[in-house]
Length: 591
Image (cartoon, rainbow, N blue to C red; front, top):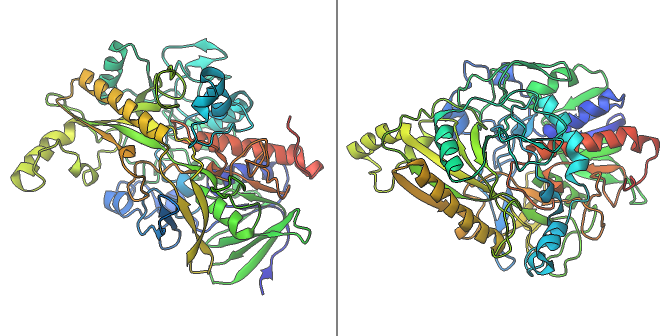
């Protein structure tokens, strides 16, 4: 029988970006919050100080900051006719191994989604007609919230994180120094954009000659010393290049550890329980509300944490798995289209090109996680799709980040020997002259894609593993080929001597190849309980005191990293809880 802890106002399950932002907002409002995280406590000064941070073997290759597959894996198949098998390596599920989640080891690209991304279905029908949106395979739906409604919360997240960038649209005033395609912002980024390095110069010059619109990617690798609205001080980035898969010993990469924990852990109305795995949300006797969560602590004991409000703020797949195991909501059935839990999984559709120069001296060892230049001319609906066989697009970018010697050993032009003296000569030459154009494409959900509980495989606690059934939509495949061709054109305009296009969507999707790690959906938001698991406030339709926050709420994926949108939605939900919900516990209104 489970032991029972004292009741909390709110229990937060998972202390990554979503959980820490919500816990900060709710404790500042006076609520008592207990956070539960499956990983250990991790902080910068203890675990990734400057003395050990740039260790590629430890962090980049062995991935010591990640949650190992033995503790947290899924099973996978492309279609329902196959038998799913467990993922035995990290693959695309690069989950955080401790508190802070993936927010501690992420690269740092800090995007807002475009206005179109929140209304893909209605905007596609409006511009191109119903046939374009209803191709028989895709399952498009709007989010129930617009960009304009989310803009103040994007701004709040950017202030907390100290994001570096250059605005392209402030209240409708367009600046060519930023992204001219972005949605209108209320003000500029809190810190200036990062430096422009050599690969970015080549990209900027080439795309400008082509009539395109390059800009510096907004980054959570901050450009100057900064004090955020919570009073936390961060340092300026030193361009060491070690961000993705690493902690930042310089306190200059935004993370829960760097931006929120120094304030949060000092509040007497906050408590953290680490090394504990939440297995289910507990339903009340009437089935209309929840009473808290049950977890397994680090000693293997089953414990109940009662709470008036439950916030699932874990990684996307964990949120969905907990809902399914708790039997909250109806599991999505792709044969009938009924049910909502497990609906609309989608990924990121990636293509691009590798390129090598003969007469450049590009130093890849100088850079930072999100540093690069991008064009959005072929992103979202920024170009006419009338005569194209797809919707959506990709942010086409080049990066100036980690020149990790082990990882880069394989980035040699086709035909270069892979061993011996020929390999050594090729590596010595092209290590300094290699670059990539990376197309981070949108991903549209399909009717056949689903997340459910695997009937065969279970974890060490006896809980069924999550089963993923997914393959790319044909629209996404066509988009990836189109944007790959654009990347090849740009690489040639840049003067690359060797150009080799790639397209991850030209074959069956696999979880094993890390094209990206941006997995979304499964507990999507919307205005219709028949097609969404949570409402526009991320509040469960089936239990009004349960909120499910994170990328699991995205009905579709955009041509951008999801973190900024995750942060904005978390802040918006937390404010709705303490400003409105606690005074009238019920489903929140549409307005």
